Image (cartoon, rainbow, N blue to C red; front, side, top):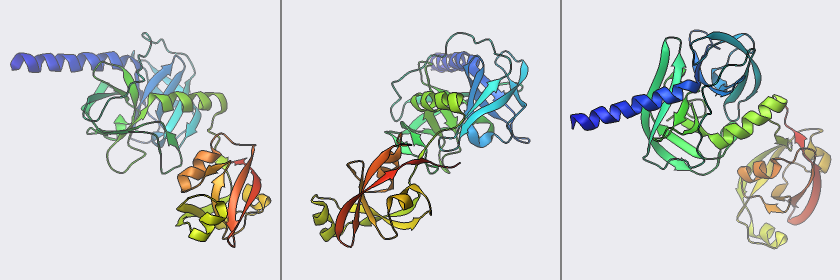
Length: 300
């Protein structure tokens, strides 16, 4: 038994050491730093909620050197921020990633850094699931809820699987319960756009909505079976919906030819549609009609 435990302990320590080659310490809020990942020689990915300044952010690199970085872009929706190093760091090999995410119950390790050295957390995946939307409107490619004893400085840590593959970034900024790992697919997508544009462009219709049961008469007007839709509670003056002729009390049952049954369907329809004119199927007074709305970019 002692040999088994010793072997397990050594394996964990080795994996932490390997992941530590890309773990950095970020000091961007008073008395409470966070961790980050050396994503590229001059780019660090970290947790947006832990960033309280935009310039001259002290960073401790894997080799122990202290440098500064500036915010290149941030996305509160996915709790990701990209920092640009003023002097590129020397990466120790390539960051090994895996597109195969761990299953519920599998062991994971989160590896971060503070000024004295590495920090590590071990635990399991408590929930693994498909794509989901954060309370801030961000799209996360996979749900990875972790059973680890996370704390403030561990946000931004690299999460690895039992083979040492990087699978995501730890954050406590998207939930009030267990911490999450933002998967590699999300990091790659969001970080690329932040590096290129400094922000994530999201579609905007300019309405306040609420899901409602779709009256049978309305479903008949649409000539399809649909049990729920969304009702317009407010319309922003001059916004895309207002310009399209959408009014208070309209029931939106479809966008771009796809049924709208809840608020997530609306966000999905708007994703990647900035500047495009989309058809919006509304039911008004029991009569279905199609309006055209040009989707704008949501103001930050």
